[in-house]
Length: 56
Image: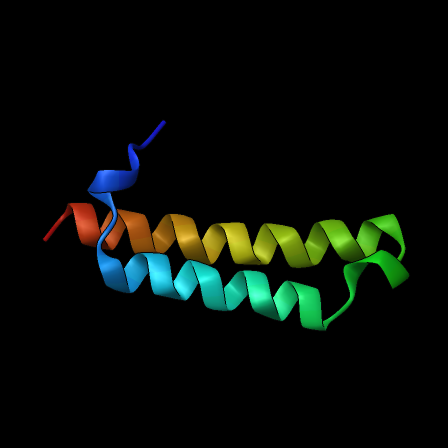
């Protein structure tokens, strides 16, 4: 598990934007399959961003 201090400020801001996007899309109204797909896409983007930041 990554420690919070390993994240750049930019990465944290992007994560916050994605969380807001999730809330705006109101995931509670989606069925479980759609919800899982959206959450997985966001997780994958965040994971990719972490890898990029750690490789800098």
